[in-house]
Image 1 (spheres, one colour):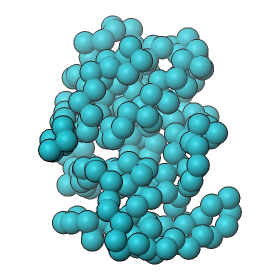
Image 2 (spheres, rainbow, N blue to C red; image 1 turned 90 degrees about the vertical axis):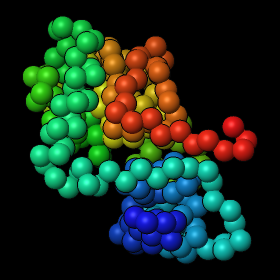
Image 3 (cartoon, rainbow, N blue to C red; image 1 turned 120 degrees about the horizontal axis):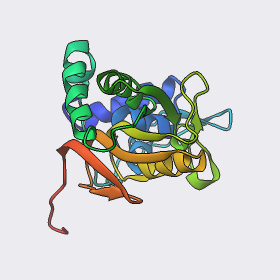
Length: 218
């Protein structure tokens, strides 16, 4: 994607396909606030509680401060994905000799975690965060889920894998969910971190890239 207009167009296409604003944020690697702004600028229709809602475009509204990370050049090629996953696995390998579980945060974190798990020779689990249900209002009222099609969490040390950290909310939610299930997250890793986080709730965070906005107000 080249510019904001491309992002607005992509947000409209995703909304027309029935994705929630939280899912759109996940697909475009932007914050929920940015996704909401993009959808509203496009005038697209999104779903909320099973109903279709028309978003009114406001051409005068300014967009939120955010950074879009497009890693599709990696994602569309399995060989490149494996190289990147191996680098991410290398960042995790220093934490714990007996870790036998890697957890991917859906959607994009799932495929990456699969390759990381293969490199580290661990089992695989996936977590779908609350933002995939989010449209408007308080996201704390929603809950994420671990897929039953993959490995269990209880009494296991694990690694957490995602593609991008935008605010840290999803990663923190995942860490809390793992602990609530009786697991122990030892380290997290992402492709790109927009916040430059060193840890979340006591869990170390690693990234291949740190993308930090520097502006007049910083």
